[in-house]
Amino acid sequence: SCNIIGSGIFISPKGVLDHAGSVGFSLIVWVLGGGICALGSLCYAELGVTIPKSGGDYSYVTEIFGGLVGFLLLWSAVLIMYPTTLAVIALTFSNYVLQPAFPNCLPPYIATRLLATTCVLFLTWVNCSSVRWGTRIQDIFTVGKLLALVLIIVVGMIQIAKGHYDALAPQTAFEFIKDPSVGQIALAFLQASFAYSGWNFLNYVTEEVVEPRKNLPRAIYISIPLVTLVYTLTNIAYFSSMSPQELLDSNAVAVTFGEKLLGVFSWVMPISVALSTFGGINGYLFTSSRLCFSGAREGHLPYLLAMIHLKSCTPIPALLVCCTATIVILCIGDTHNLINYVSFINYLSYGVTIAGLLYYRWKKPKLFRPIKVNLLVPCSYLVFWAVLLGFSLYSEPVVCGMGLVIMLTGVPIYFIGVQWKNKPHWISITYLGQRLCYVVFPQDDPSEIQPLTEKSEL
Image 1 (cartoon, rainbow, N blue to C red):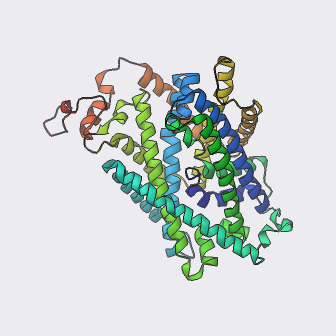
Image 2: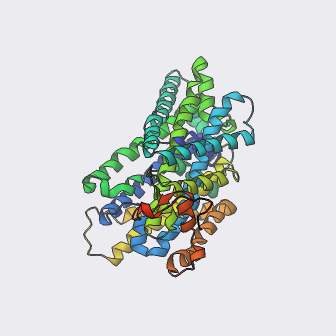
Image 3: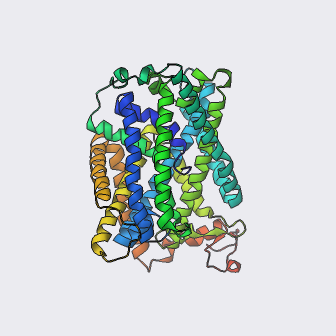
């Protein structure tokens, strides 16, 4: 549950309400979003025990469809999904830190970007310096998100008990601020899916799960309903003290909520959310750099990204690539467009993986499957997936189409970088990077690697 519950719940409510058009419909989107995640999780459980490899989507797609499709999924994750998610969380961190200083207006654009960039750079340095520091930050700052959510839900329920639920009354909950089209409803689901992202993280460590046949379904049955309940109650709590228009006008929903209900203790809310988002940035940096590391080790990314520092044993090149991509994305989009962007690519990857389950059933029908879901589960998910992506692309052709184009740019990169085995020496960046970062490939002899000096031959 803690892998799913993240900073997304402090970001997405505004986008979900904006696209859904009414309070009641936005709550329906949150509940149905959890249900869709449950369908996807069951499919991933079957894949996890049928193909018992850590690495999640990337491992399954590579095993089922081959290297090119696996590479495209990895390429989109490295260039789009993880950096964009990091950028969104970093912008949320800066907005929640700066909002109390600008109570009557939005924080300046430059200030939010500078603070977000500083945060990403600092946490990249921490993760480059020590694995232990990175994991300790993650453990400590997880408390922040739990504190903020518990506080919001408890205070909201107290408000409702006192009779403050005008926006939630049936006669007003379905009063549409604007008439939502099918495309807008699809975008509402994309916004909600950002908060639910993480439901497939357990599949990244399948090899380390004890008795996955029992524990994968058990984790799904417990975590998905719990997270759906928490997210729905959090949104209900928001509407116990805020009108729909107030929520849409707020740049930091939890801060506005705290200012209205917590009085002199309103400072607790921005601090709690800042702790949550700070920990979220650290967690995504940690996992995204490891994905780069795994892809490079399999030969799908430059070997430079599979190298580790001689002393700290940290994947410095992979961390620097993730950090650089995140800072670039920070400067080119606003939060809600970035969420549509990353959620579209996320759903595209989920759909390809679950389509792989059906193809694998046809390709290897006699293969033993410790968990075998009813065919209605993946088929229902794929129908929803096709409708969602189709209408999202129709409603936001530039934002969603750009992600699709970037993913397809991986095709020539795959044939040049992976399939072409006898490349000239000057094309490889590994030799130079190895000396610049003082890193080695895990199988290398460290004594052969020398740090870069003025007299070194490049």
